[in-house]
Image 1 (cartoon, chains in turn orange, cyan):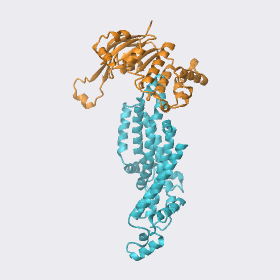
Image 2 (cartoon, helix red, strand yellow; image 1 turned 45 degrees about the horizontal axis):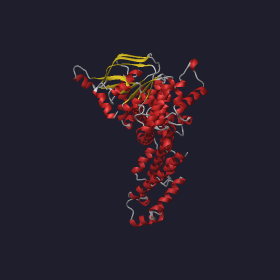
Image 3 (cartoon, rainbow over the protein chains, first blue to last red; image 1 turned 90 degrees about the vertical axis):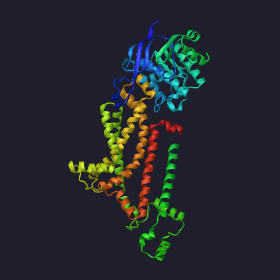
Image 4 (cartoon, rainbow over the protein chains, first blue to last red; image 1 turned 120 degrees about the vertical axis):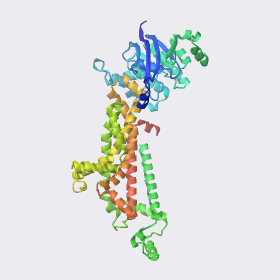
Length: 253
Length: 314
């Protein structure tokens, strides 16, 4: 199977934005933070890869770097997908509050130009199909995001990503803000879409149980370093690092 | 519709409350129509007789309601000093002050929007730093001082208008506008500075949200993200500020009228206060309150148009 993503010796630094006075005082001027340290991994096409780590360990920075939102880094990132998409943790910030759901979902379709151009009816049809696919009522098109529940919004966010015709999705803690029953529904939805469409998902989470349900392989990250990676079953049964053991103990797995 | 009805009801109740408080305040303050008519050296007996004749000895509430009904009918009472109906004194001056406030408001919106958007878009660059520094200075200069500077610069140096050469809107509307545009700029400048600062920070804050990243990943360029996604949400707090400044501008124009020698409501208000001409002061206070409340009502309606969340919570 071909790789969709290869990351090789990725290093990211954050420069602290200090005032001029402080900069002048310090002679060397060295005040940057090493956020990602020599991160290397591959991801196969059609795979669900888990990324586990505590908050602040660099998970989101890695996601940003892959999407091209983190411009300054050392190392190599090779992604075989022209339009990677992302689903965010907070469903209340991920949809524009002043637009109706229908408008939001149609936006990527309106972007299509030239021979790919869709008529209004075709766009509406695609949106309706996608709403059915993510398990929502077509009537929601006429509503504003504020009228939807957290779970519904997360489904909309997923639908939005899929309407961009992507085959690579980063899900950054997509269920952490939802309650447990809704979490299970969203996980099932993501798995169903993965099976039906064959999209590759980089699934970021701090919840080992959710990762176990979702992923084929898992990476454990701490302080910007990937401590271990491998098949979920193997890592959970035979943790190599003490930190992984600690996490598994805490999760009672 | 229900929302508008509710707002209308609140508006009427507020106006009623204000009229009551104003009437009560001027009832408590020493000095009344009888004293004003006869002067301070009148005998207590003659004062008492005149009060009886004018009905000033009746219970407070009775007098309040009578005054209120007259007020609603357009009879604002008679000036203590000039002995002419208050309405006649005010009606021809009111348009001057209101047009000045409206023009200032218009200048503020038209100028602050593009500058705010520009600085937000180029935040951190040198142009942004420069504009924001000038902005900070403009924000801290009081408008009457700005008025003096404008009189000096545009009036005496550039000779774009004749300081003190006010033309009434009744004789020459164009000349009137050409004169009041300068005081209006003086009123607008500090408010422009505030709006620019708020709009800039609001845009920058809004641009950090996840939906903006999604908008980029859908293939929008910076301008499309800004105008289609960010601006609509970022402008909501700015509209709130604008609603509040409308009241400020009305009061601002009262002060600035003195600097530019404009015979508007401001001059009548100041002379009436110094002569204790209470019916005039009362009427002007209530008219200002009325304009402020109506403008807030308009802001609430505009709010609902630009922010769908408000009608949802209603």
